[in-house]
Length: 104
Length: 210
Image 1 (cartoon, each protein chain N blue to C red):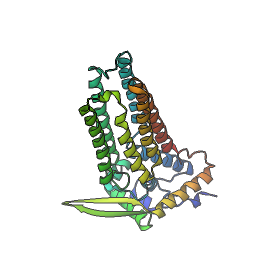
Image 2: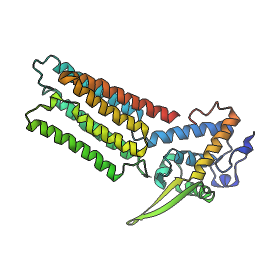
Image 3: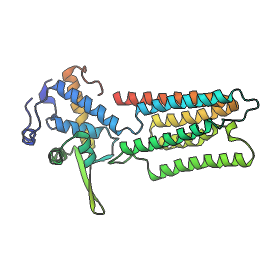
């Protein structure tokens, strides 16, 4: 087992933050773009780049809704994304012998 | 591991070792759970201590009464203040935690209606007791039963077993208080609610680490 087994799409600090944050929600729940941005502390442009990568891989889905003149973008982890994070966590645990993953 | 090309393009990503990735995953998961939790453990624990002190103080003031007359005029403002502050803190923390969240984390309209109806039942019972000339202070824990059962029913439907247990715990304290008599109801309520809230705080904290 080596680092190559870690999903390269998730093994990037910002995308790991995005996926782990969305995974903290119950399955099926969505988070607004602005709350996600606030929780992770990214600029909108940077967040959009990473969300697009994750969406292309079907790890997340995003939806834009209009509420009057305001448009709200919501983001959710797909079941595929949740499974990918699970596999990533297992791979990390195997690599590290389970010592450094207190919460996972 | 080398950073992916898009990571370099975004200008903020460096390579992560598995150790760094594990630490980041641990930290972000813990933080996200904490920020999205509508009932943080410290709030539940603070509430537990406050309810124990408040109801303990009421018990101290009523235990020497012969015949029993209920909480004194000095106790009532503290009881009302506790209920108001508790309600405001609950609403405020929940609103903050679920800001931007859609889905099961939020209470549905029908669930809010059930909770409002449960409190309406409490008000009707208190009013009925007053009309019948009975001091509600003789059955102080009766007000816990309907809201506790309503919260349990809502969370049974959601399959949220921790919150279901909290609701049932509150209802059980309500029934136990009725059996303990007017004076005994106060320590039963204080110790019982404190225990229920501390168990809930422990369960939330455990869930955040699990």
